[in-house]
Length: 171
Image (cartoon, rainbow, N blue to C red; front, side, top):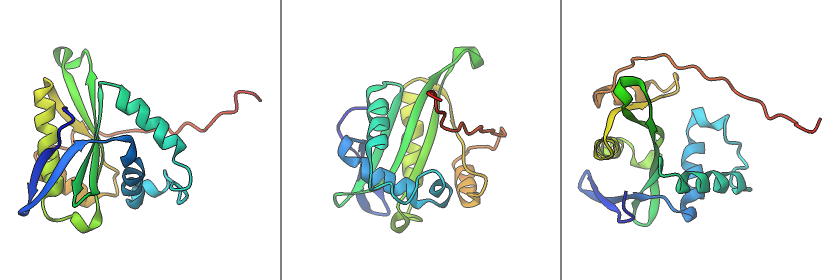
């Protein structure tokens, strides 16, 4: 993606989608933490210390297989998502796009912004030569599941996660 913002017209409102920059990290963390499923992942003191988020941003921003984007409206970050481009041997060596952390600020929901973002993500995946766009969604987010279904996504797999506790290598 170029550094130039992509205009998004949502319900006759002009917004811009662009690659995230370091200065956006606090707003992105706030969007992610505002979602109920994410609250157990990001404690309420996330604003107090952005150090781990800034380190993660640097890793994302310097990896050409990662793309973190934000949507701006009137100078404020109102939405975000991350795309990861995964090469693999399955599907005849197909490249796939993984969509993660799709968040739209509560006061911008229901106007088509999420759909516009997903259409952009699908177009970006095609532009990069992906054969598949995939995502996961917390099982409790049934409205999100309906939303993704309306966009043509199918619930084709069951996902599993294993949380790895922080280890003390010194002791």
